[in-house]
Length: 130
Image (cartoon, rainbow, N blue to C red; front, side, top):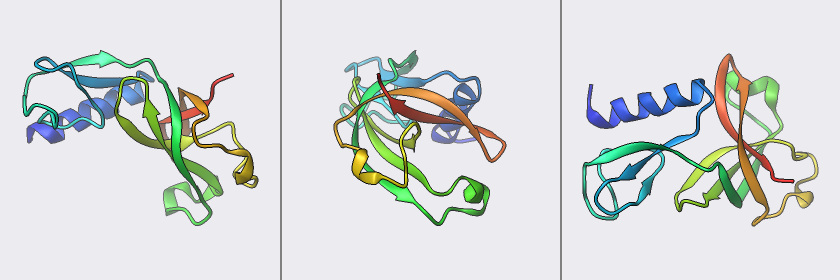
């Protein structure tokens, strides 16, 4: 198994355990999420797994009305790009918002990580921070 594939597999194992983990470069301190085998900031291959704060803000979003077969029963739902406090951006489901009222969903709104079950799998999601 390639290093990148091993890292992604480990990331999803953490998610299945409801842990929000990411890689931190041992050389420059950059956070890498989703996990990759090379730090895009300094080119290092030396990382450690760290627990992330789970806090961030909504960078952008879309409402999914026609979903993949596995998520058909969930539609409509919101998927967004979340700017994490630690720096990286990650795409995830946004819960606790009304997909039928997208005008109530605001970019920049504070979010926190949570976990949901969908399609027989645990998924990372984000919800509005109260």
